[in-house]
Image 1 (cartoon, rainbow, N blue to C red):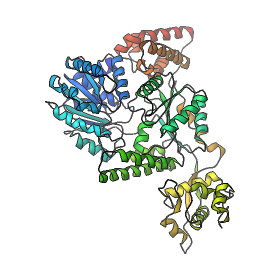
Image 2: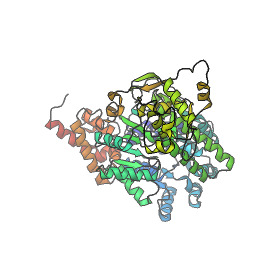
Image 3: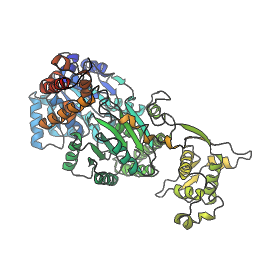
Image 4: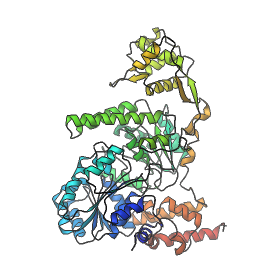
Length: 620
């Protein structure tokens, strides 16, 4: 069977996506490859198709149990025998899986990197021909990547134990130039084809919001987007619990996931999300890697992540089916401090010497700085992401909150001078809140405690809203006029740049900032961004038929104990509801419907479509 025949018969697609075919052809010719492709671009097909055509077996190294279980389940549903080996199995189950592999029962085996060094797995190459080793989430092998895992270094030792060197295929969604070079070097890729398909996910709408009360903003959004599946990321376990409890009390269908739960709790909660029993997931970044749930319509970051790599990967879990989806980030002033704490904590636990630990720490703090800039830029958010990863897009994408927000240039020279002088004359001893309250003229306990009401610049910005003053402070931080000290209780100070500006004898140069217009309609969360998430029925010519097909999908998924998207994705149901396939020939023309899935499910969907066409008038 040719690669194109396999693609249609097993996976139900008529053509390959960008970048897939050259990678597959290179693997089949015996050449190593590195594929850098965004989440949802179809990386797994790049090694699954060759795996079914090569004579031996393929070992896929995956970092998380959830990734293996999800992909093996999808392969088995498509008629491909595959297995996984990780800590979720007993030693008896592992022994049975390896014995089946030796007997040729499996073409693909997923394995956790830690398992590669075990005696039982190291014996596999002695009895079985391994033609291909696929390394998923390959950035984990680089200490300059955002998810360095020392266990990934075991891959090199394992490959060296294989009598005949296999083809090595590495894949990742995010890799800066430094990480890419690390992957190539450490894995020892030989004359590899390196394919970068680009980071632009055109179906995703990007938005940054700075709500005064994040929970209020979140509940407003969820109420406006009922019946949608989404992920809400929080940066600590404690916050996951707080957000989960609040949403649960309000009656939202929500579950939770973090490392503090037991293995059984995490598995149960993850399954409820994947099976759409509870379509809302509140989680730390421990959740999601490798989850192929295709109908996630939004990803909300309740806190700013620690770097652009993490943000892009996590946000990219929305809209894997290619339909419109939203990626919203709620920024708060404490987010930077929390991430600095988490970065420090993580580096304390890393198995690195002091010099390397310091180098990694500095690199991570620089990534955090660039992540913070993303939250405050007034330029196109999509363009910012693309530039970060070395690509260039349009300065106006039309599908991000910045491109849909009206900005105006504001001369804040006088405001800046007041802020600088109050900070200097008060001894540079106070945080942002105290400084903002003081220049605005608030008379609260903190102001009286610090006696800031006696400062000569107290209340000089009384006519300026607190929200606007905070915007100005944030912009001055970004432009290096101000800095926050890296302390447990950060203090706002003026920089040498601000001192020089104040001491300019010829009159200070104007400070002009680009800020959102202050109008009631300018709040993107009130409507502009909503259109991007409306959508489980995008492209459905007959939305009521789509709902009938979705109900059937849920019924069949429960019968077969698989997630609904394993039966058919939303995109496939949309096509069905648009083209009304009522025969096998027509059904096999729908994307995602292969021969195996047609035999298993196709006739049930045909019947619903025929009944619908009889009951209503449809366009020819």
